[in-house]
Length: 125
Image 1 (cartoon, rainbow, N blue to C red):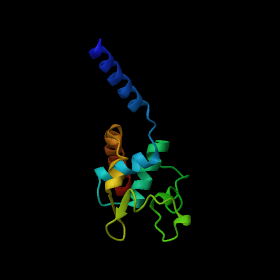
Image 2: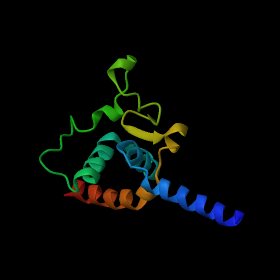
Image 3: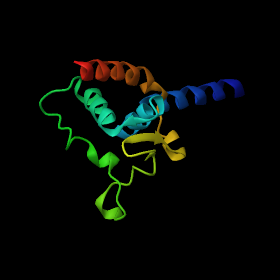
């Protein structure tokens, strides 16, 4: 009886984990983890593809998802993700932070890799 109840708990734990909704933070953290040193523009393009299936005329290099990478000394002017979950290593490159590791989703790794191929092939055209 005791073994059965533990198995039931494990089953529900797995179901809860699978039901956990993925969000933009999960995608960005997973992308930066998989591609350390990537640019914010590359991540934003990839996030747009993840949410919309392809890049189209609605994507703006200057406006789409920029708040995820804004850094400012005035904490009221940004969301505070940059510096907390990912940080700049130079003027344009980003890496994951220790807190950002908690946002990585294993379920997104294959999707991130396929989107990366798509983003790279589109930028070479």
